Image (tube, helix red, strand yellow):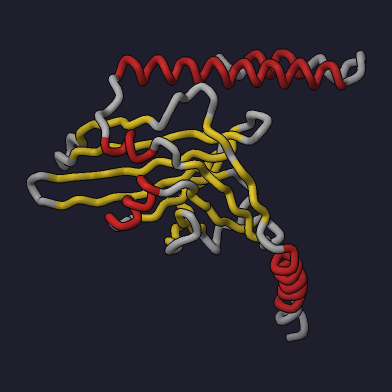
Length: 226
């Protein structure tokens, strides 16, 4: 019977110090800025053919000071004329390496906090969302300054991403983007990402030695855009 309870203390002991360290350190604030290739928030609309629901989402990508992708925010506004239902959902694409079980929280300018749950993770990040968002919160999004997205890292320290809301209200209440303009934006964003990938590859090659190590990196990187 001795081996059975042994794993529990082993798992519990590291967790407590990590939590204490996270609490003692306080939240880590990370300011992000809008993706340079996106002039503003983008509103995209369409109709779900199955349910007949009109779906619009207002979205924007955000990067770090050195231009690396950090997160994306999308606010969905779904209306069904037949059932007279209207639902708003806030979705986030967040970095990998976060604690998933605690979920995430967000607020506008430090006011009422709303909780959200992680849904699924992919190689480029993890999706989280909060459904049934109130009209009051939407008013906060439109009139507020900063969206604070709160998560926990692997040491259970709170990380707060400060997301600027400038221009959100105008885009949310305004007309949807022209599909051709959207396609052009997506092409521009893809080209920008490929350029960054190429710049990073060259930087790694320069940092590496002149031996065999950097050589395999070239074909791997060049194959990625294809």
